[in-house]
Image (tube, rainbow, N blue to C red; front, top):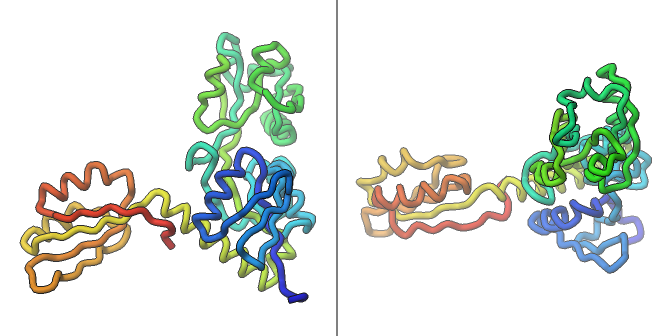
Length: 293
């Protein structure tokens, strides 16, 4: 159809690319990439996808090149982009937790606080944000843009400190560096162009995307449990069940047994299942969830 509405959606290229495509797949959108093609196919005629760097995404969304996109809170701040922040999507290439932009120095340096870097040189990819941070703190420093391999700048004596993103701190420590301050906690956000957000069809499509993406993220941390329980053991077992909602309970045909089904945090299952077994539960089944909405 010639007049079929289309939502132009930006997918982050680079370190978040694989994690984003997997998240979309769990949410119901299968994305097929082509070698050296920045416009991947998707099984949704309402979407037109573009791959672009997270660092640039908010600018493209702000100017209307894209209707919506996924990028980090850090790059929205770095670009001072005027966009609608629809929702947080806390996922990453390593873990499902926010990343941190930290101020780090050589492990054997005398610097203990940001104030100690007065008059020193700091290398970072997050140039504008870092300048603003030190200006607000009233600490005069020289901020130099880093094109990459930022951790090595201190080691090689090219900078006195760096501002770099980390999830675990492992890479920072591996380079013999020491974190002296946390400047920003960041995570992926779904953002929208202001005009697109005012368009009813586009807004509904963006909200649908968000609903399904959030459902897939929520399901990552949860599992379903089913089990059969003797009626006389029911009260003891119910006390042990940390359900997301009230458990579903049904009588088994022509028996004094009950069937229980619950959704629980995956982290408790290891200890919970042996306890349920001891209390008399049988036929315990654990199963994965695609979405929880």
